[in-house]
Image 1 (tube, rainbow, N blue to C red):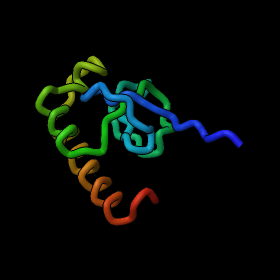
Image 2 (image 1 turned 90 degrees about the vertical axis):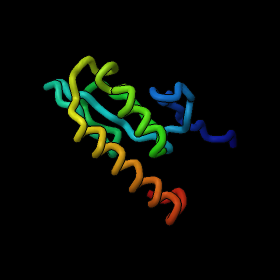
Image 3 (image 1 turned 45 degrees about the horizontal axis):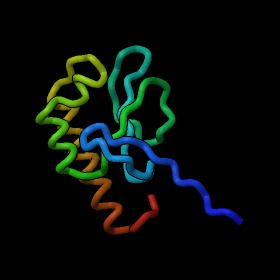
Image 4 (image 1 turned 90 degrees about the horizontal axis):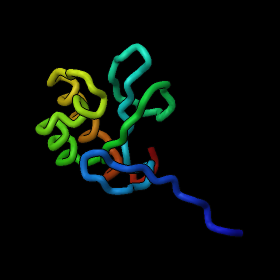
Length: 99
């Protein structure tokens, strides 16, 4: 039996290819709303970011998602993103790979 292929995605902040399970998806819906997509199934254009607080803070400082989705996002979105990433990183540390 050949080994199972691991899906890889590019982190838009660091530019590294990372396994999809280690990333969180941010999506711009067809209506133009930008939200977190923990299920990785929402309709719209998606971008991925690592589950690292440092990477999320870099995204806030450089306003990465404003550029990627060609829209103006408020600081609350970035604060929510940092809180979500921090929570998921702590959860991964406690429970391992189980989501």
